[in-house]
Length: 126
Image (cartoon, rainbow, N blue to C red; front, side, top):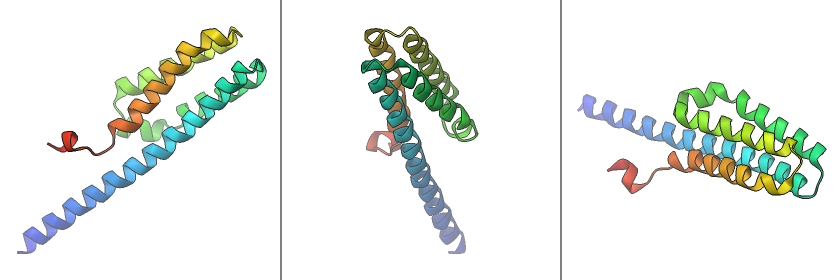
């Protein structure tokens, strides 16, 4: 009976850890999305100096999270998001707002993918 109780407690701890990880991941990605969105809005308004600064801050924020991301997120996803950040950065530095749309969409899609892949769904369990 003791073994079953210990196994149940361990399963509950693993489940609680998964929920905490999902919460941390959501907060991280929502914060990054807000920073990128602010940079894109500045670029659309023609304020490219502000957009560059905001996107640089967002990219630095992303890179500073490597202690978390390299443990909990697949490396292929990390590479894709990093590439998308620098792709958007290069289009913003061209100072053409229309050219930024595709790179912005790509980065936001990658961030959304990272956020949703950690969520618990029926299909991810069975």
